[in-house]
Length: 221
Image (cartoon, rainbow, N blue to C red; front, top):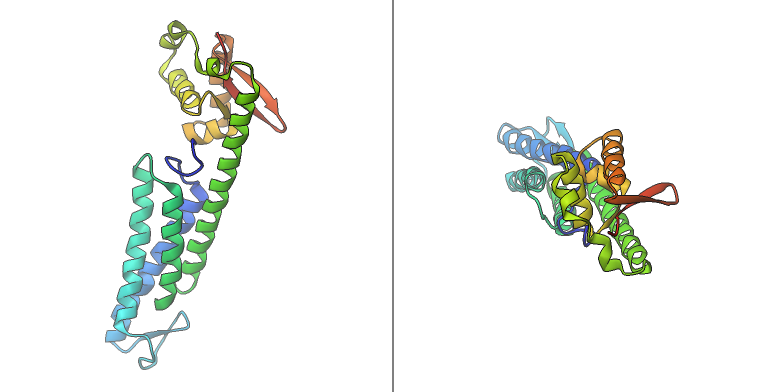
């Protein structure tokens, strides 16, 4: 992650919470529109057989639109690369607040979207901190520019999986935490470890212990 937000993949927990909350908000809005027309309305987030009291069909429409926007945004961010995660999270949090006008998806929807957005913000902040740490580590090395230069002959002979992982390290300016490699590659921890073993055996990368985890660095020629 180059800048802690732009081009990053959203954390799965955040995606799931926002999607679930968005579906609840969408369902709440649709039920509100249908219910109001037949004398069933929402009061404090619950369906009640009472006359319309303050919540109009417009609130239901607004909540429906918010639900559609949230669900659509989740599918969009999952299908696109290079999405600005920080902007997406800002939109999600704003939509969560707006949803409360119509009941917030039985209120549970609002809570789930809010938690998902907060988790995403924490993720962006921690990822940004990790990247700053990586850059400082590279800067502390002698001749850091050489860290991303490896023998191209060796790279060309790599398997597709090895090339993919090596490319992710290059995109991270030549250094990345192993845990982040697992997340960005979509491979299991065991598979990433095995691929790194092969890359390290070829002399293309090296793993440096940093606290409780490893930092993977492209080895200088």
